[in-house]
Image 1 (spheres, rainbow, N blue to C red):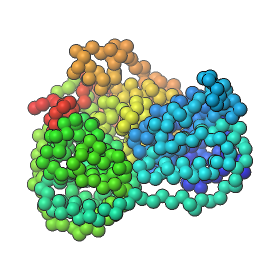
Image 2: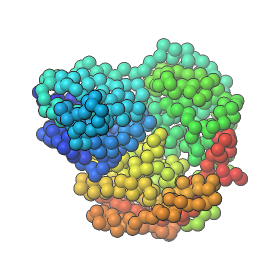
Image 3: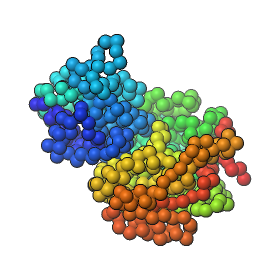
Image 4: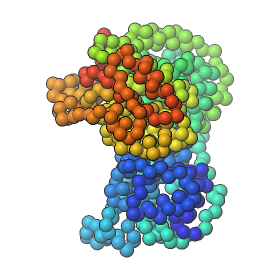
Length: 564
């Protein structure tokens, strides 16, 4: 059996029948074989988009997304997307073509022998769980079995397999249905004792709080999480990548925390006496840099599948290295306790009523972005997933999006890669059988992968694109106001955006603009008039529209600007 045939059959055996790619000389054999095996081959217009689409596909399906690229620039163009998968714990298999083995420089003291020869394996090792430079066709079965397992096991992440072109059409062993790859959840013999101690602490707590991160969804544990919080009436805040683990209107949901989190949610996290952390890293943007104030008066119980994340910044937490699903299954066996947290809920609600998300920008010129996101949510209930880009748009959405129980939220967290939203929407659309997707993006991020409008049009994908257009690189512009005396170098000065409606029309996609509050209802009606078709809505915001509240650097998480 040829190597390319083995690869195609292996992926199909794992339920993977969709790949994202940009064709190139060193992957022609692979693409041809996948075509013969009836894969859905999604051809994009930049390899970064292929990687990001594979990322979103994996988040929705909870199985490895697959992206292919040719050698040299094709492979290096994948790097940002690979890093995105690595930092956000997304399983993915990246397959790159390489020049023939006899064209590789080996140990010669030269930079390159073959055309487009590039040592992609050495370049991306720090941002993958594993990277393989294939040297012999007979190694292919072992490599693919191992790569799949590594990608999915424990804290999920990307792997890369670099295959020389001549090896791709060599012979390897026949494919046999693999019964050996068994993905075992991360368990811990200390779980029972940990739960006993945690349960006792929750009985005594007056102000408990649960922080849910992406680790909950990665472990396929969203149902178990909801069952737990409903059983014991625990209030829940989420990280950026954990927003979709609990519906917006769930009575136990408090809000989104972090540098630009909901003011009342940050208050809850700063003021709780017990913090239970599930699948979240407690990084700087979640807690602020003032560790002493954060831990004051509270006990932290932290569960994560990766041991290195436990007691990383906070050295006094009570920790358990475990798969979140396994932990929740065990914790759900605990009898319901009769502890009343009503006063705590009342205290948090009073903070929310003092200053809600819409109130943060009540005196701005033009449209209120948080108010707009609430309106957009009302019209977008048919969207199966919402993707956002990075920047002001991302934070406005995180603060105010009203997600339903079945809606996914897709964004670039740890990498913070502008240009993510559009290819992520494409990947999610294929993962969700071409159901409607809502893509929310800033004018700056949209221009990074704007070429993928052609991918949307060619595949007739029902992706609804909303550009939150503040006519600048808004988050950095806000930073320049705070620290650079409003010198707007490369954010306003030296930056511009085109007429997005004309561009969408050039791609054959219908589009319109919103410039005033009176136009919002009609614009959103047009956006969703035909759920089966793509549409672009360019929504104009004043250039000085800030993202508030914002955590004050060096201050406790409960202290956010603007102060009032």
